[in-house]
Image (cartoon, rainbow, N blue to C red):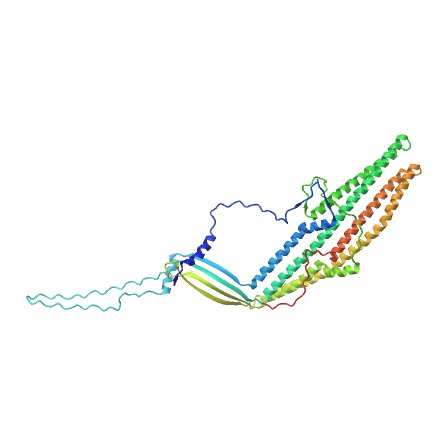
Length: 524
């Protein structure tokens, strides 16, 4: 037994750490969004930003909230790998406890520790009285000697037992064998991290396709405004011409009314085109991660720069189907999901096997037989603990059965995803062909509609035609322009979808290589 007063210092620090602070709680500061979470303000009305397609894609890759969410998911799966892998590393714990009990609870413990000598001086001899000599002068009666009284036995003193106890323990635990459960769980966590990376690739491809489609929608709605403005200009000029002719008496009032009604019917289409253009801009700005709440009404957040060109696809349908099956990140994530379910079966099968753990540590505690809390005893301990469930009521069997069923579901989902991906490629290719044929026919139709309008106006000026011919020619020219522009937008949208499904433009910011099958490691 040694006196170790310094060993109380960890205990006191442990107890003081758990005491509530006496200071008044300060008001919590409002959380500030991180730079990636702060909304990006749109360009001010004083300087509208010229925006090209490449600029829009670059801005979306930096600021799109969906991409930020996918990146955060990757960080979460990285933490999951660290969490699962920690089961293979030693676990070191420091624990401390202080306890005080009532004297009535510890008084009965004295007999468990033994007693002192029951009677003090039990081996001492009783003293013998000495004879007294008889005096010679006169005979005096001799007194009877009285023996000394024997000492009384004293009650045995009670052993002191401390009613206050404390203990500080440092313990390290190590998993020795788990039947392959931990190793399979680590492989599952790593595969989940790969799935998160593949989902980020798919998210990036989807955002890029959306930006391309929405950018072309901005261009086509702006072009349709020009078409509607030209229509209103034609009809306004026709209405003014008919009013002049009516003033000279060459045409009836019916022609003036007819031109005015046609002009009034064309104005709602112009208003609708302007509204569609504004909505298309706001939609693209939202995808770019811009905050448009502070913009004035009908203010353009940016000025799109570009045209509705007709680029050729990078591959034909056959190569597109083959490339989509090989490179589509969604299909790759489905294949990795099958590997995850295979590892999950190993995790569940580990329930049939035993587990083995080793524990080692050092304990310091006060001496219960001493009345001083500073008197302490200390020492080490070591143990190996094993556990093997012989029968668990078929719980492990049920879990393995569920894992096998999930594996079959993952395989079925992959087969269905392959068919859906093929369908998406075929639909995008069909839309490309349809839009291309419409564009080729629309060019000639626009040229013919312009010529028809010119002839109708000349015939009306010469008195050989009617005003209805001019109005019909204007409507047909507007329809031809609209059809061709919409076909161009449809073509570019279908091309963006074709590139997304076939994973043609894989972003270099996230070059994730699909996981390759590797032999399973040694089980632990």
